[in-house]
Image (cartoon, rainbow, N blue to C red; front, side):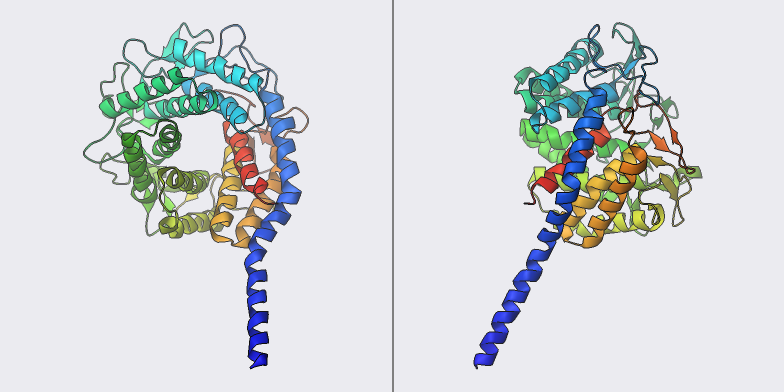
Amino acid sequence: MQFHKTTGLLAALLFLSIAQLPGQELADVAKIYRPRLETNLTENIIAFWYPKTLDRTNGGYLLNHDIEGRLKGPGTKMIVTQARMVWFYSHLARTGYGGQEYLDAADAGYRFLKEKMWDQKNGGFYWEVDVTGEKKLRLKKHLYGQSFALYALSEYYLATGKKEALDLATQLFNLMEAKAHDKIYGGYLECFNEDWTPAPPGEMSYMGESGFKLMNTHLHLLEAMTTFYRASKLPLARERLLELIAIQSNAVVRKGLGACTDKHQRNWEPVLTGNYARVSYGHDLENIWLLNDACDAAGISNYPLLDLYRALFDYALKYGYDEDQGGFFYYGAFNQPAQNREKSWWVQSEACVSALYMYRLTHDARYLRVFEKTYDWIGKHQVDWKNGEWFDTIMPDGTPSGDKAQIWKSGYHNGRAMMECLEILKAQK
């Protein structure tokens, strides 16, 4: 009898020690990688963008820097990256990486969006303006751009508490609801003329053919709605958030493949002709953690989606992961090794976040190994420790390529990734 009591006690102790292993393993990783990520964020990423990209003459941000970080000229200002920088500075302040200086930097972008990029007649944000904001260069409305405006305004409100920012976000949300929400098939129609009349069928928009619904656009509508709902607590925003969760976890997923496709007809029938039958590993990995965050905001469990998360991650690992050096390639055809073997800064960023989210959900150590190996590759190759920021692309031969800042590249992907990863790592003592 005594023997059984002792055995039971030993078994219980063994169980407790095993139960503690996952947290301990993440704590060990945190000791090594937390200081590395903090250095990367503060001394490399923030130090590049602030203060030199602030346009103190016109407002907003100058985003036209070459591979060594030298300003090539004033450039233009596009809604996606102008809004992303507002989000970046707002989130830096809200998460404690700086104070008033970053709120002031966010305010410079917020005022430019409101005063120069908002269409005073028709509502919504212009796609692109000149450096002053006075000349409107691309007038049409695309939901991809509107999504980042909603994201930025919501985050700026959460950082500052300025009701006028939430009011503008709500006005934009209501406009999107009235003009773009697809009440028949769900999701959002994407392409509109300046006055919000539908773009002609077959016309090429800023994001491709006008009649398509994109996984990419709805991915960023998902993140925007997540933040907008947290800011507004509007019941209709939660309803739209739940709808976007369903789309990103179901409509865009090819069930027999275990991966997502980008192009869809209005009724969500996938378009797989030509080069559309391919998988973007970075978007699938980003989809995992943005769905995770959206479920948390909506107050629903992530566990019903865990099989999907595993399938998406497994597919990216199988076909898009560099087993030798670490990091993820860009894209590839269905069930084939990656065709485009370039390594983009944003793909590596999203992979790091997704890997830590997956570990936190599953306690499967292989996700930690992917995080470590990917970040080690980033530190050695993607980060420009000399001139600041991350290289846009590392080519298959190992050479860096692309500008440090341009209308599609800002401090959003990698800055956000470092903050998201650090939030998880900081929770481990």
